[in-house]
Length: 433
Image (cartoon, rainbow, N blue to C red; front, side, top):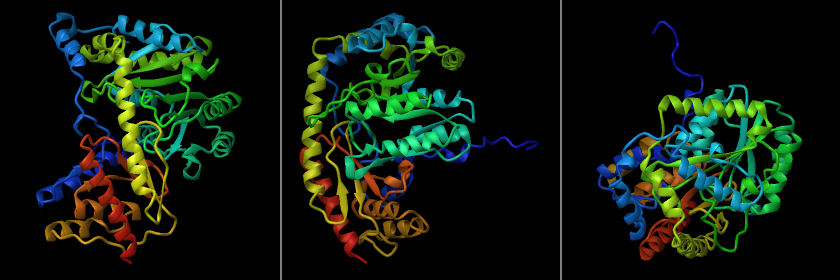
C-alpha cells in the first residue's frame, strides 16, 4: 500500500465474549458438545417471547408502514412515548428531539465513541463490558482508561479511585457507568450514583449511563436512573429492547440525551452523531413501531416482574453452589443476568489442568494455552473437559482473574448441572498442581 491504512486503534478491538467461539467451534468439530454460557442471549438459552408480544409484532408485519424508511432519529411517535417515560420518572425533562434510535446499542456505542475527539477520553469500570472498552480504546488508539469495581464491596465503584484518576488526567472528558452491571450483576444504590455524578460535576465531565438492564433488578436492590440524578450535567442514557423483551435480534436501542440545550459543545457533539445517522438514513423501523404497543401494554409490568422473579431464583441458586467452593469469591447478583466468579489471589498457576478424555480436544488445548492469562487457561480447560463455554474476566479489560457465567438457562435441572459441574471443575483444577 502506498500509505498506511490501518487505524491506530485497530488493535484495541477485542470481544472475548465472541472471541472464544472460534475455539469452541474447533472443539465441537472434535466431538465436544458445547454449552454456550458466553453470551447474554435469552433466546439462544430457551426463553420464549410471550404470545401477546408476538401477536403485536405479527400485526405490525401486516402494516405497510413498517417496511419503509422513518425519520433519521427514529419514529416520532415512539420517541414521544420514550420521552414521556423519562419524564414520568422525574428529574431531567426531555422531548422526542432528545431521543436517538440506533440499530442496537452496539451501533450507538460505535457512534458515541467514534465521533469524540481522539484526545477526549472516557473512563469506564473494570471489569468492563467489551463493547464499550474496545470502542473507547479504538477511538483513542490507547488502552481503555478504567476505575475499579471492588469485589469485596459487592462490586461497587471505588469512588476514591474514580475521582483521583479523573483529577490527575485532564484528557478524561467523560465517565461511563454500567448499571445494572455487566459482567458482575451489581446494582448501584442511589447514594453511589449520586457520588459519581458529584465527581462528574466537580471535574466538569459528561456522563454516559448504560441502562440496558434497568428493568432487570431483583434481590431487593434499589437504584435510580440517570434522568433522576443528572441535574444540569450533560449526559446520555443507553437503553434498548434486546434484554428486557427480550428481542436481541431486532437490533433496536436508543440514547436519551440530557441537557444538550445547556451545553453548546455537548450539543454540537450530539448533532455530529445525528448527522452520522443521517448518512445511514435511519435505523430499522419495525421494532420501533412495536415499542409503544408492547411497553405501553397493561401486561408489560407483569412480564417484567415475572422475569425478575425467575432471574432472582437462578442467581440465588448459583450463588448457593459457588459460595461453598474454596479458592474463589462470589457476590450474589442483584441485576442483569450474570455472575462473576473471582479466583482468590495467587491460587492459579500455569501447571494446573483438567483431565480431557477426548484426545483431539486435548491436542487443540495444548496448542492454545501457551502464554495466555491464567484465568483464560482455566476457561480453555473447562471448555475442553466439559463443553461449558464461559468468558475469562481478563477479557473484560480487567487484571483480576476469574470468569463470567449467565443466569439464562431455562431448564432448571440443566442449569444446576452446569453450575455444579463448573464448581467441581474449579476444585479439581485448583488441586491439580
